[in-house]
Image 1 (cartoon, each protein chain N blue to C red):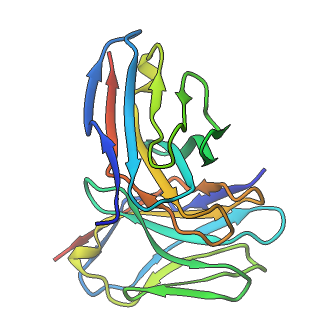
Image 2: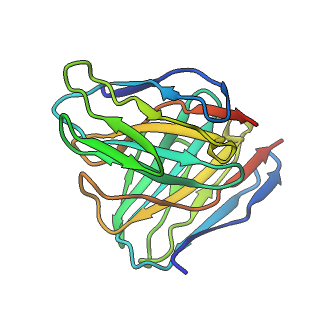
Length: 111
Length: 114
């Protein structure tokens, strides 16, 4: 069945470091892919999305490219800030439009 | 302000005592959904609703009930809570259910069943 696998956290980085959070998926067809972010004590909010192969989603300095050949959607940011500390979830939309979620990756940025 | 409102934020209860977690959205969204979030498991869908009076099971529906009598409200009911239902619960909504629709989430309800 459909699934999403994310790298385990927590990921701890210093401010201004380069960030990569890996996400790979298994799905039939060509699902839409999403990254959501959850700040402490809050609900999730959409960070970026990509709907077809080779699409690049971007928002707030974060980017992710839909790679069909490697079934991946890795999240990247060139220079992280303390305010980026949060839990990041990768997700895909199944053919019935319901979301399948990864386990989440906690990101800690130290000043 | 556009929002999804869940209540309560925190709830401690005992095994077997019926409870309801409320969810309301003010965006006229057709689609609503309930998730539970557990460490290492991400979010798992409990139930969802495509519109008024239309509900369907998600991946982990056992022990839960929902209803959708009005478009704005989608309460989650635990008729006889058990300790394995201790979790963080989120309600979410969107305009419709398509391939690209963005979900709006409530702030969550932390439930502890003793």
